[in-house]
Image 1 (cartoon, one colour):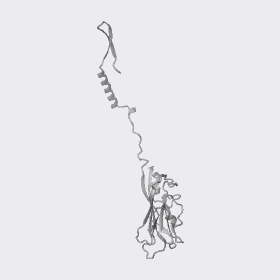
Image 2: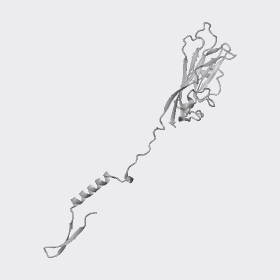
Image 3: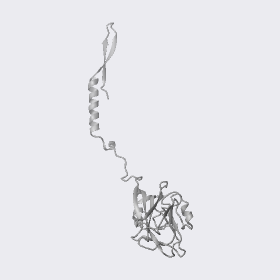
Image 4: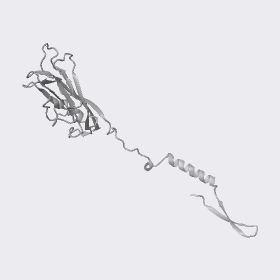
Length: 239
């Protein structure tokens, strides 16, 4: 607090009295002591005055991790014609092996256990001809292949239903001699996130999507080619 003041009475020229206030210390000394006292307090703050940093997560929940997942095992799937000479089928993009899934990715269980959410980035089917060393051409139409942004539950029944899609292509597995596969893909650019415990909930979320194919006029019960399945999947919300 400021130093105490004392008063003294002084006589004026006219003989009257007036009161004058004087200080025991100068104002300069007083403020200098206050400044010194403030520095000492800042140099050694009390425990209750110390600042603590806010808690921060070690992992950002919105960080996205991408994984390539492929078919379990080392053997490719066979593309077989049936007794009527038709080779038709489909594969859904869902790699979980659960309800509605047509295949199981080799590392799905391990990867999905680390995250809460998943969605499709890209789904790929590779068709490889089986007649590359044959000198006898097998009759039949080219194989029609197209994508579907929703999962399927049945193989196409006509070639026109496959060719009706915007990304449809014709792959000639019958007369191909190049020994190179054909890759067909779909991308999940507009899909929302889904839970890894239910990766294909329906609608435009998660790992929905499919690739279908159809060909006819083949010899019955013939291996027309081989099929490899893979995809790129995005995961987030690391647990």
